[in-house]
Image 1 (cartoon, rainbow, N blue to C red):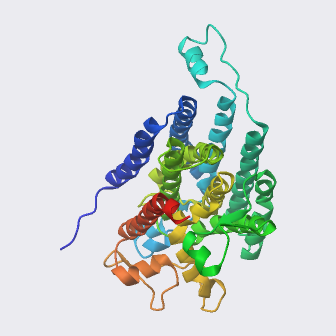
Image 2: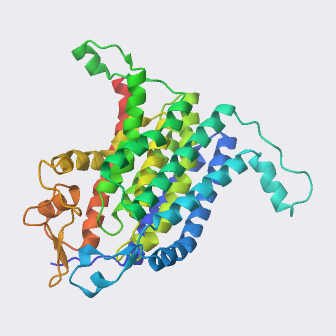
Image 3: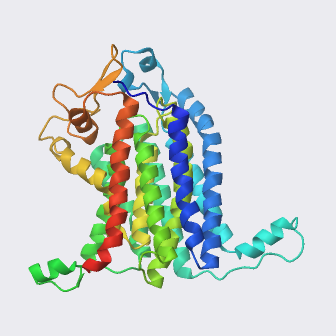
Length: 415
């Protein structure tokens, strides 16, 4: 029996409802009024980012297409849709709007939000909004995040235009991560679970020093490239970014509200991360309205690089980089599973995509399938449409993120 898929609008509606429900459920649970008002402000900035992204993408797509920065959808090869040139590097629009959003929030953060709202509501009359004292360390972290994300946005667009070699792509994120290392003020060790303490004779906390900083650089490189290699299906790159951003946001709000145990310093880190994730989720949802199947634009390396680095920045400067890996289980699995091809032990084509059958409209693995989650899903679950394939992988992503949140609820008993 053939199952009828919901319409494109209905599928996007489900994603939008998921994005709205998380802050709607968790923001009222935050007892700190000042933190709650700042988070609501960040959520409104994210909403503005969604609207601006939807407006800006068609303009960028028109320009990139006129300059020949476009391609054909290989997953529709042999059909009329496969012959239509589709604008690439739409991530440039998303990245620019995202940077505008977080710069705008930094400006708003200088003011007491309540007095600012009253001033605007009065028609810009009466007493001017009060200025807030902002810690220098917060500004250092925030501007380091801006510098790093901006660098990766530039690198991604340069790759879309110049087709940079892989070896260079691995080196440049190291330089982009330097502002993070300079700004990082958290611990440089790891907490060892109680069962491992007895089994391995380890203390409860192991200080790693410079090795931990090497780990942070490696995390930046991994996040930058992990979304880029779990790709090739309409909506997959933006979809996985959106789900991970929502999972991080839920984790942040659970800690800020006190539902998960955390120290005041840890809650400050989660506030910082939430200020990045609200605009990230909003801008990515705006991209999905164009990139969801059937895609009207391709995101390009511009989006995957900047999105991956934004996630890494949130984890590092939010001081939960180890926990972040729980939300990236599909990306970790895809990377490990892809290693034989990435290191050329197994032949690796330029595009590790499945094969489209114009007669049935279904995707199937190649006769010698590529080693990635996209093709593995087809091997395990059978041939299917591109839309269904994307939804299946995103369901795996959502379940992994839910499992990560559940583990966080259970982990305090293991330390």
